[in-house]
Amino acid sequence: MPPGEELHRAVYDHLGRRQEALGAFQCALAIWEEVGDRAGESVTRYNLAMVYRQQGRLREAAEEPKQGVGLDASVQNPDLEQHRAMLARVEAERRAQQPEGGGP
Image (cartoon, rainbow, N blue to C red; front, top):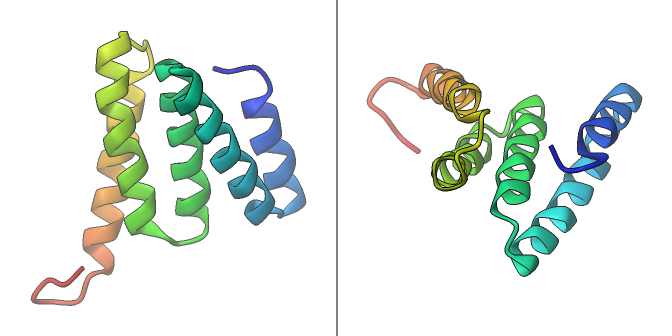
């Protein structure tokens, strides 16, 4: 995990400041993308998904790990299975919230 990310998420979450955590992770994501650090990008996408999930934003929570899982595979991230499992949980939660007949 990139240095400090887990700590930042834990601190912001403990303080109930998820919006600030979201901003910090979005900033980190832009940096990882700019420098081409695919492993850092993957972990940051996972962290973004966790914040989105806590906010009930399940569409966004599913999109981040979808991209991250592809990155995980390309860099042989040892957390690949954990990230796939999280994606499956979020997608199941999202389906459960959708009204009968589908929808976004």
